[in-house]
Length: 395
Image 1: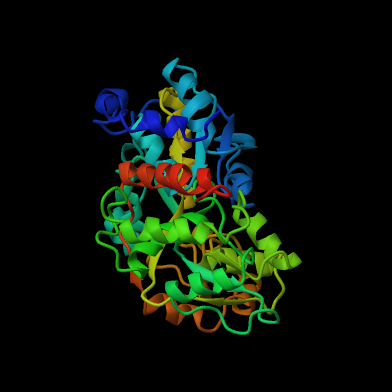
Image 2: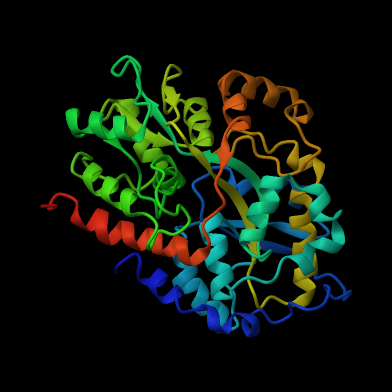
């Protein structure tokens, strides 16, 4: 089945959103909390840590949760089986961990229980507690899902310095290098990889395109660039990890990455320690984050327990561990959490893995506003139809 079929349906799905959201009005009922139950948890992200995020809460609060039953799957299931089950009044999971795209799409489909009414009564005001970047991404999903980790994202170029002494400094240099070295650069598919999505969504800023927030009419230079680059790309890996494996094994000399993926892949040994990274000139960070969402249609008593579990992810014990190696450096969404608040062994690991120039690169960079849902869907559809579909047969 065409992987973009659910996205095409989404473009016309916004009409029934207010009615679908049901209890969006008031605060969570003060009815009794449910008896302890096993939390049904779906992880649709690339991070390896997702299945464990509720374990500490479950262990410390047996009066709320008996345990966590986690399943990992592609985000596509949100648009098919999960959506159908929610509409039938039988949500198959309680909580979903997803990225920005998944959070926005679930909000548009109306499958999320509004988040503010669940957790706001349990925490300090979000505008005071969250970092500006976290507030920006939380607003992008209309507060239907809760952001729990945040990162500047990318795009960055990772390369093997023993094979490529200096990375291209501009988009034009990258294309010229790809022409001269066909098959030696890849970026992952943007519909499945945040590294790939950051690369594609970052190009309009790097190329000074007409309107970087309008992939329909504002990206003429970007689509032309991607089409030409396609002639020299051997294939599009499905995941960030697969692209990094190509670089590590010598299949390519350079790949698109994110700041978090760079740290994770070196920390886990997928990439050699000497792997280098470089930004392109005029780069704008395309921010990324992890979101927790609650499926619509759950019993009110269960929602109260779930709200407590999610609120715990924004409290200091969890946020102080959000630096753990993963795809979302630095991680914490709270203003009052810095690396020196992390456990000592985590501080040591991050100081070893985070490149000395990375904090300055982030602090001195520009941040692009996130594309809205319809623009994100347009970007992914156009890439699939105009770039990927023509790979290997482009005239």
